[in-house]
Image (cartoon, rainbow, N blue to C red; front, side, top):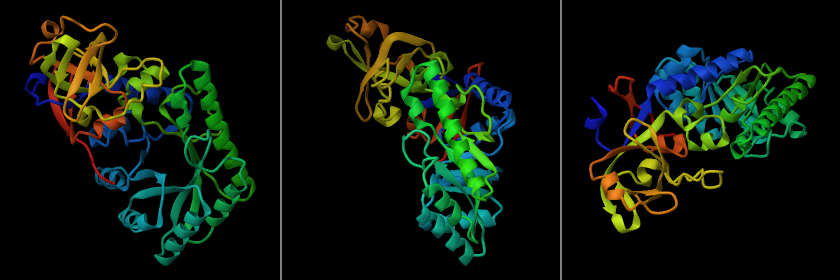
Length: 376
């Protein structure tokens, strides 16, 4: 199959760019002497995970138990479920572990730690649990110096649970766009997580794993003493938010949405596309960054960006292509009905969530269909 034969909208993966992104991240973390555990929530795709593993990745990170089930069925056993566990999900975790999946959990509170240990004792299982550390005030986790860190460690020392390590995610790095600021955030992330591990060890707890990571900090860290592994996810495709952060160029973005021009509003300088927010998502992550791309950067069919043209608006199944600044009075001639274009997304994770499959595009233009996972 070729691009001309695909129904639109469709999620395209440029295989050459994807492989280049995978190789770049793996080489960087190899040079820093740490294991790489990619976060597969971005792709939710076995073929992508296999490419990451072939490049040298060891283990994966997931954000849903459905992902854990699907990737375990595809042959991956070393899995970190990097969302705080709740007791209602422990039977699902138990079932996976009893099938041979080395599934690790995370928590950031004493109540959940006690519940995990109690469930483990009840079912004759010992759950490996990592403590989530808050390194930047972004979302969740225990502050490295907080007294409750040791309380959680003690709760996980009970029969039914074991403390496997600490992990953190510098989500605030997405708000930065200067190399020095990104390097400083990477060091803050590292130092906070290592300090938490040191406190736990000083209190007599084993803490074998120190796991950090986000795409911006993974690509900006200058040294990682005390860290055992790094996690990152969106790097595999990249997106316009990451381009604005400064860790990739638009030419590195491996994901795009194939769309077709279906009409015009010539007096407004608009071309109407068959990809609305149901295809691109409602994510407007570039809106507060240095370059607002609307709902996405417009590209020619071969993936070359068309400077100044963005998807400026979106309804459910309709997108509006417009030129930034003054309206294009030649829009009908420039983009006639039937024209096929690609749109680079603001947020790759949100955009691919709209599609049941990828169309993987080789250098020679051949297209293969790769399924992706849904559900929690």
